[in-house]
Structure formats: C-alpha cells, structure tokens
Length: 303
Image (cartoon, rainbow, N blue to C red; front, side, top):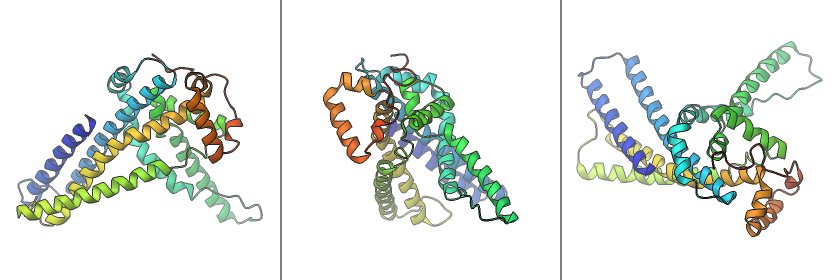
C-alpha cells in the first residue's frame, strides 16, 4: 500500500517538475533564475519529505507489531497504524524532515571531533578547538532527539519524537550498546541494493524514452532526465519496501535491550539462540546494565 502511495507521489512530482520546467524554459512562466533554483529546491524538499513520511509510517507500524509479538500480546498492527497516521503523525512528519539532515551533519562532524593535546599551547589551536567542541556538541544534542531509532521507540511506546530519541539513547547508554547500534551494516546493505534497483529503473526509463522517440521535456537532455526520474522512483519504492526489514531489526534490538526478561519468558528458544549469537559477535555486552524488567514502561503503551 505504501509502495503504491510512494509511486503515486513519484508520478505526481515527476509531472510537476517536468511541467514547471517546460513552462519556465518556454517562457510561459516568467521568473528570475534565482526563483527557478528556489522552485527546484522546494520541489526536491517536498518530494524528499513526502517519501520520508511514508517510510517512517511503515517503520513505526512495523515496530509496534514487533512489540506486540515480543510481549506475546494480540497483534497491534491496526492500532499501531492508526496511531502512526493520526496520534503520532505530527512527530513522524517533524522527524522525517530533520532526521536525515541531522544524521548527515553528524557524519560530517564526527571527523571534526576534537582531541585535546595538552602539550599544545598555541592560542590559535585552542581557539579552533573551542569552536570545534561547540559545533560537535550542538550536532550531538540535535542527534539525541533526531535519531532514526526514535521512530522505533514511537512505534513501541508511543512517545513524542523528542522523548523517544532521548529515551532510546539513554537505554543504549545504560546497556553500553552505543557503539553497537552505530553499526550500519544492514542499512548499508539495503542502501546498496536500493542503488542497484534505482540504476536498473533509470536504465529502463532511458530505454522507454529511446523507444518512444520523444523527450520528456522540451529543454533538452532527455537521457539524463529519463534516467534521473527512473532512478529516483526506483530508490524511493525500494527503500519504502526495505523499511520493513530495517524497522524489524531495530525493533528487535530495542526490545532486546529494554526487555530481555520478557523475551526469555515469552520466547525461550529464540531468546537462547539470540543470546548465544549476540555473545559471539559482541562478547560481554549482555553483562552491562541488564534490566530485570522492561526499561521505562515494560510493555508497549496502549496494548
């Protein structure tokens, strides 16, 4: 269903982009070059925001379903979907606009994280170090709320975006898993697969354009335009689908960090297998801050 919505949104924004560019370059819409750039930026941001909202609704819904299975309750699929599209919709929209940007900034500033050199007494070095610390601290504070894990916590416990981000980071810090959850192996693999799908979709769009014999727009570059549109549509549809996998993994990790006792009680065989596998990959991590009950709430709220 959400793939269909993503496809509809992609078609809508493709027609909007092509139509506006034809109007601007054919003289039907007389605006300055700066306004043309502004229109392109606004269209891109709007499309990106719509795609992220659809993707995170899927992630919140899947996380709530994982929570109901974890605590051996009736399926919460319908209730979680209702909450994601009504009760928590504001938090999802708010986070969808900023989470990606904040995570990108954190990747950039991670390499700027200052390392104090006590032997250095240079004023310029200390001055630069001060601003590096302030910048990194600012981005870290933003990342505390705008974290992708917040959507999993919203689906499980229905907190607001800020509270969810803070609580899930607090949970990982308490368990000593902050370094573990930064392992982006699964998201990286899914991203590479999405890029391949996007490339294939873009190539297919170029073939269709060549067979049709007419360009999509009147301002030239038909091959580049066709490939770009096909590439973006392929990326969006595949990442919305792969959000199910990503959210399932994140939901299991959050529940395993916060409620391992419930997992052992409700699914003993799976709990044993997961503990054994976890200890092989991350030895000693299960001995840090192990809760005796679910952290914070115990069971998903409203279930």
